Amino acid sequence: MSHEEDVPEVQLFHGTVVHSTASSAADVLPEHVLVVRRGRVERLVPARQLSDQLQRLGGTAEDVVHLEADQLLLPGLVDAHIHPCQYPNAGLALDLPLLEWLQRYTFPLEARFRDEEFAAGVYETVVERTLRNGTTCASYFASIHRPATERLADICRRRGQRALVGKTCMDMNSPADYCENTDESLQETAAFVAGQLRRRCSLVRPSITPRFAITCSERLLNGLGKIANQHQLHVQTHLNETLPEKALVAKLFPAAHSYTDVYQRAGLLGPRTVLAHCLHHDEGELQIMANSGAGVAHCANSNNSLRSGLCDVRKLHEAGVSVGLGTDMSGGYHPSVLDSVRATLHTSNVHAIHRDDYEALTFRDAFRMATLEGARALGLDDIIGNFEPGKQFDAVVAHVGHEESNVDLLTPHSHDELLQKFVYLGDSRDICAVYVAGRQVVSNPTQEWSKSGG
Ligand code: GUN
Ligand code: FE
Image (cartoon, rainbow, N blue to C red; front, side, top):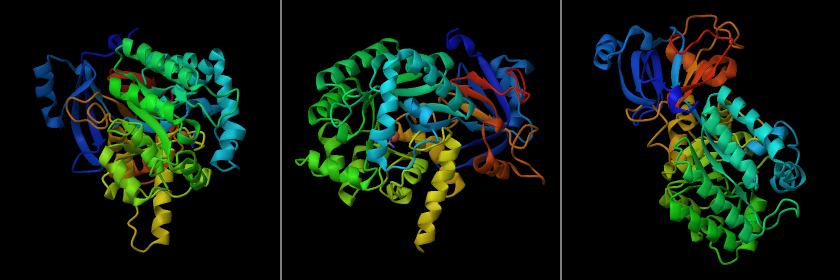
């Protein structure tokens, strides 16, 4: 069945709605009705208007989903940076620093994705797992192989996950069996992009994906910048993750003024670019990032697990850079954005422990980064990130403390407290339904939930 066929003409969700807006990192709205038409948010109004809305739409009581008192309707979670081809290594092999970790564990695993069937099996599992954990939109770094990457895009379309999908590019400093030549990398990227654009699928879009400057020649970066600008495509890469990486880039690109300048020169920085990590920039690089409108994927679990460093999110914010959250699995060991939220808060707390003048991020800040700001970092905030009218209905129904949950609620809690419980303690068991563009893509069998009523 096509995506559109799965989407009801009208859906009304009645209950507590939470989202980030321009004025509030987490606006908690009990007793509201969210009107969704053909997969898009039409309006968000107080529940006393429910019958008026039904009348206006010519709907019936059947079109209304009544959330239970302790359920929350949240925007879908955005994973701004994830390597689905590294999932078999999740939780493994975190004993080496980045550059050695890549050579020893990561490149050999990714090389196996030349086997399309192996790749399809892993990708199917990743899309299933991340959807169950509430990831309605992911920016995927696939392997260098076009056929396997096309399978990933197909799986996202079929399962109904919104995604930016990139065929990773690398033409130097890579193992012989996991390396492309420059022309091949450009041709395969162009073919991948053409194939995806031909489908005119708004859910899954191609992303230009130079792995990072160490594995990409100047000619490859320039060629990728050209393709990106020709079609106004999304771009994703890694930047300033570790100090040894930064030092090697300086050696490899002596004409560039900085690591960030390497990408700027190639025309790879813009409002549709997301830069993973960004820990070790200087002031000049920060200005380039801010002026370009590029977003950052903050990958706190990975930064801690590989001991890459502590990203200062406040400083990025002060410079005007949008910061989304990335699991960076398997540099980060967990595929859930909720884990990224927690690692983000812990990292921010470490800054605050060490510096008297540092104001730690709040759970609300992290919630915004996992939703609206993540969408902005990916250049997708015109279509997702919150429940503003006109946006796609990408949503999670959270229900902490129900029978199968791992969370115990021992006293009555406000909706704001339920949000905190979900953010700090929740997992896939506490998610009873997930929607992407109005289509229900996850239904948790352990919780009572159906398309016609909660
Ligand atoms: N830098 C280049 N490739 C990678 C990768 O796969 N993971 C991480 N964390 N950093 C990278
Ligand atoms: Fe990464």
